[in-house]
Image (cartoon, rainbow, N blue to C red; front, side, top):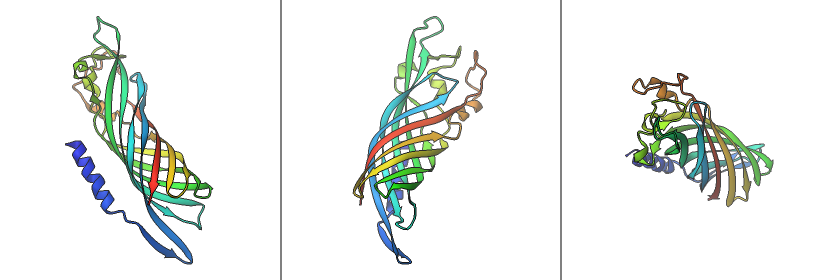
Length: 228
């Protein structure tokens, strides 16, 4: 259901983006649409768990405002991604065999970027904010629900799935290419505590580690974009 709602949100955003041309004094301002897709890598930077970054995919759309008379261009849009992340765990307190508790997470990000021109429109340095809505962490293997998370005595794999749904991020990266097709590398860092929701859950057992949950999202993406 959540993925259906997110998909509908994307469709609505697409309906509001059109290709248009307007005049600004004697200089043309060109608005174009780009569709992109690629690969991504996701992690949560935290001292509470031992995590391993996982791979996934990213895709979306953007509307670019090209400003020939400025040192920068600007763009806004939406991107979707699905990634995996592993948390170190064990079967029980009597069986300490190391287990990778693998989760997947679905994210939707509304993005606004500035593109500083390094070599005209052929190479730009990108930076800007984004707002993110994400799903809970979904345990891939249901048989691991009662496995224990390392660094805790009784915290189970299913206890840590309900993380904060809304996050504020910042992005930096590079975009290179010609007007029709471009390639983009981007690093996304979460400024908000994506594990904060776990701090308000009184039903989980924190025996063995009383440290409050704190974690920041880290995502690396590589994508190709076709512009119209």
